[in-house]
Length: 276
Ligand SMILES: [Zn+2]
Image (cartoon, rainbow, N blue to C red; front, top):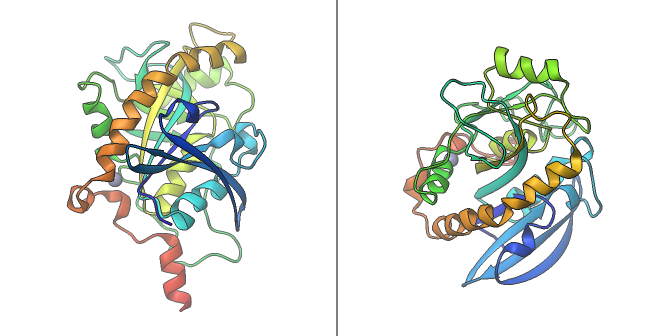
């Protein structure tokens, strides 16, 4: 079975989609994956709760993103991923007006953790497969599609991943991300690994960031307050995502043919081709 689009979101978001929901579990080389198939108006799409994808709750630094990204892109054949994540807002670029409650469509990211995120393992590796282009890591066409759904009113920006979590960033780390790296958003290692793995899998990855706090203005950040702030935007996010899913379902291949996202074949295709 093959699907066009998947949504990766936070806990409780799946049930906000109208339609019939079916839970599934599969095994991958990177571990088990729990996901749902939602059927609405004749369209079937996949939904993953990244914190529960392994079957029980995982903090950001405990998630093995490879398992569900493998399930989506290799097993389920998804071409487009739309994701959302709760972040802090810092406005590192001039003329930005991001605040608590803002939804932002980031254009790119900075990984200040310097962690390694890849499908490569000691047994799954080849010199041709894993040196990937880093141009337009967040698909500009999906971002534009999402922006059109809001009449072009959402800001862009740069997302920085400063710490893996589970702690929040220190004040000097926030200032560093804002002033040295000109980031507009700060998040733990939730979506940055997904973006990198999406490029290795040659799929288009769009991202909506949900600003739950302004770390330099509203510290200390309380986890419960962040979760409450995040939920306030969940309905609005689903109302943005569903029209995009419908549009992607009937997309014309040439609309995305020039995307950097799929300039190279997926690492799985390259390794398989070489091994064959
Ligand atoms: Zn793309």
